[in-house]
Length: 339
Length: 262
Ligand SMILES: Cc1cc2nc3c(=O)[nH]c(=O)nc-3n(C[C@H](O)[C@H](O)[C@H](O)COP(=O)(O)OP(=O)(O)OC[C@H]3O[C@@H](n4cnc5c(N)ncnc54)[C@H](O)[C@@H]3O)c2cc1C
Ligand SMILES: Cc1cc2nc3c(=O)[nH]c(=O)nc-3n(C[C@H](O)[C@H](O)[C@H](O)COP(=O)(O)OP(=O)(O)OC[C@H]3O[C@@H](n4cnc5c(N)ncnc54)[C@H](O)[C@@H]3O)c2cc1C
Image (cartoon, rainbow over all chains, first blue to last red; front, side):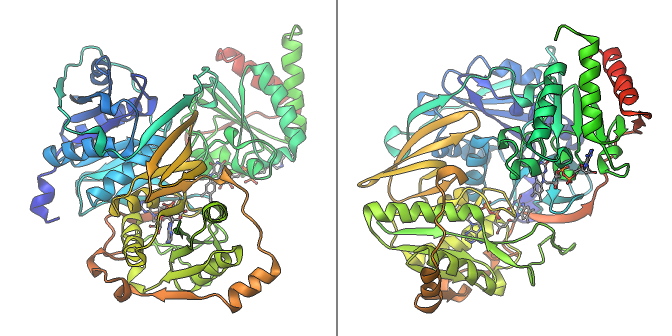
């Protein structure tokens, strides 16, 4: 695009993914982050909401930071289908020309974003963990961990618009609602015909969130290679139960088969921000910290005083997990003999 | 049913150099392997061929050494391999990669199904499948953990973070597969020998697929990695709890108690 064409694109958009009429958390996280970024660019935040019977949502989106909500409410959009959602969003983007489009990196977000970016022939940074504005160049910089232990890479999309990124759930803070905020609702009509849509959804099964998933846990005790083996995780589970915490892991014990991938915390696992994180035998590689750095209180137990995790822990114990963890378990038992 | 499986050669280790200018990985001299997830795509294709017949082509864009990945696919039982290799392709982002693969698929022309891995083990964007589907105007079914074909209809079980969906569409279509869809076969020695001795890998350059150079490689890539840098993650000072294990443990428990975390 020419510099003049680039200038026509203004504003920051966030795609709001919803399930059964409830926005998914990462969409709300992005409204908060989007608000901060948009203020630096002095532009509006627009939420784009697609679905059927979603009319109850828009107010909430404004409270979370949107100035405008574009609503495409239609039976054809009841189930997420790539073509339907891509058609709707692309049409709106071409009409209104936003400079930035952010999408949560959920299964659906990662199915949708590349489809849109290919149609618009623009760039999309996948699964980033940090976003900021380069004011001088008027660009959004999307960053994520790169190979190696402590490498990050910044990605930009200088010559095409909108600049797109998918953002890992859980890494941006969920900002508090501001119920005084006012915004504009824009309903758009769809002229899609069911017979033109090539994919049908025959069945959807989602297990109801039980509120105890790793991402939502209040306290998480994470085990790394320093635990030594599967037995180490049994010991960790005992500690976690006493603390009423969930167990998590770095990627290496997962690769070693000591614990399932569902428990992995980090860039390619889950992003968590519990009130308490305790890392046991965790070195603190950037791919791991990308998923836990926003924890409120970070405690590290590691035998190596030079381990990276001590650069970002609040409290540390330098020692062998095989001694420290049993000592913690003992202490907790003594404190509360009933458990 | 004719199928094309897109496969990528990836560096064997993640301990790899990069060009700080372009952010591209320096792949020369680094041993490459077939992207593990693409073995699942190959296995899924072989499984469908057993049931429905047809010809399977493996297609890869990469430097000349990526031929090894295609040979590995051939030794698994794939019928033919095509390597897209041209210095013009270097430094491609996912869109430019998809554009190049798309032109090759237009040249191949005869296919009912395209299979891809969900994601590579190096870039890990999971974007090439959906972008390729868009450029070829095909329906996409992503994250498959089961595939069934019934005449001209294809059904998949799609994995979601908290469940699954059953999706159906008409052929031709593009499917990306998850690691857990199957366990890829390990080729027998004689199939490996056959793959190297009797089977052919065609090499196509930019001119062979009639592409516009402005869409290729780094030049045709809207996404640029601007900077790769070391980052020391830091957050204030750490307080080390000293003493014997039980003393340190006691102190930590006291702190957690004070902070209302017990
Ligand atoms: C593309 C990519 C994606 C990745 N994604 C993730 C991800 O999502 N999540 C993730 O966690 N990692 C991820 N990694 C891996 C990451 O780079 C690190 O290799 C990994 O986090 C290290 O795990 P660890 O800390 O358990 O092991 P190590 O780095 O081996 O550290 C073990 C630590 O335990 C300590 N130790 C050893 N014995 C004891 C003992 N007896 N008592 C106390 N301490 C002891 C050691 O001093 C050391 O610090 C990824 C890597 C790449 C390249
Ligand atoms: C650490 C890192 C991060 C990157 N981040 C981005 C980013 O955010 N956005 C971006 O646009 N580019 C990015 N790139 C560049 C990107 O990796 C390349 O464009 C690459 O050619 C394709 O993307 P992928 O490896 O992510 O593949 P994915 O999209 O993850 O691959 C999915 C499937 O597509 C098929 N496929 C992928 N590449 C090929 C190929 N060369 N030949 C045949 N089939 C193939 C395979 O079936 C594969 O399983 C990044 C590169 C690196 C190293």
